[in-house]
Image 1 (tube, helix red, strand yellow):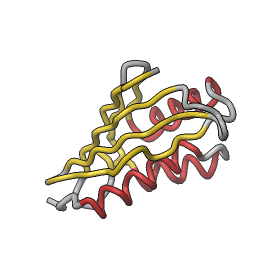
Image 2: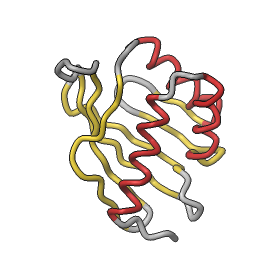
Image 3: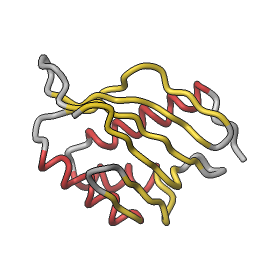
Length: 123
């Protein structure tokens, strides 16, 4: 089992948010394949996806719903064991965020996300 240090958690959170911000479909798909394990799952109060195809489609749908919005890291990611936790904000540059949330992710021994559970702190 890989130990999820704060440095490791920060790296995962940065890669994860870069993936959600990637607007090029082919580049986003590559990022999903690199960051998520093949049978990974994602669930939050608004949506869910499983596997590479399901997660990629879910992120595409979220991008369509919030055109021009970007995710930014909020606070300091942390982790222990095989779990990382980080908070984010979603908004348009120069404007107040439209949502804040916290995601908790389980990481496999290769550093790929196996399960992500998202929580909306404010929407």
